[in-house]
Image (cartoon, rainbow, N blue to C red; front, side, top):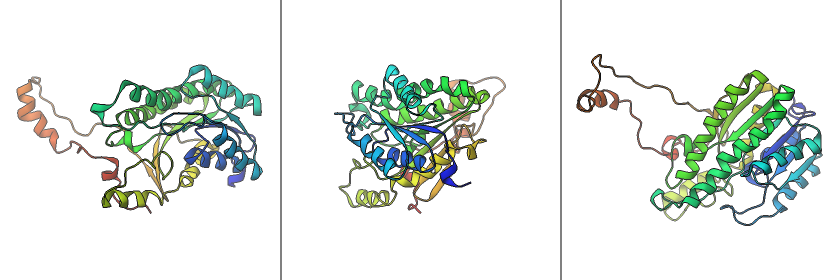
Length: 306
């Protein structure tokens, strides 16, 4: 199947498509034949400000390459706004077939200093926004008995990271949301999958690089350009992936990784039941060999990008 024919006649809504990974996915989908609704409110990394310029730039890139695009500057973090952006795609192009939940902000701070506003702002954009946009599109997907969701998660949630309790919780929540969508909407031929992207973009440019070790890490990240994540997003949204749903992938430069999902690792049993003392004496020691370490994403993905 030629990439340029994958999305002929289809319409994709990509949130946070004014730059970085979102822009690359929007452009790639347009090159594959989709009409694209570019959603971006043009705010800063922490959610401040607002401008239509980033979305306009993405639209210009798509049109220069022969594609068709329209713009929405509505916020994903509001139910009525999410409905408006989905309707905007339908109004512009007659239908909607694909939703890519990519919009995001960062409010990184160590947990014991995180404010309620730090927490709520990130949860509202990533997790609530993914629900609002997905739910708004679900009515159209059900009616046409087809549709595909691609949610951009993170290994910060799948594995862990310092100073990102809000972001990690939101991103892991998105994977559970995706699985629930996949289960609930399978009867309507609707699929839902997640991608945890590795890329040097505006979202990672705030990573500190003061020590030699941090500088070395950043140098590796800078090799992983945002466009490396677009091919998998295009594939997952296409009919070529009609049998792929409820999965979590990671993209890392030229690697595609299928991630595990929570499953039982080891079981202990006592027919007479447990007491706290018996757990300390028998249960916990029996389980300890299978307990997971207190690791971070960089500990698990410890090899250089390839």
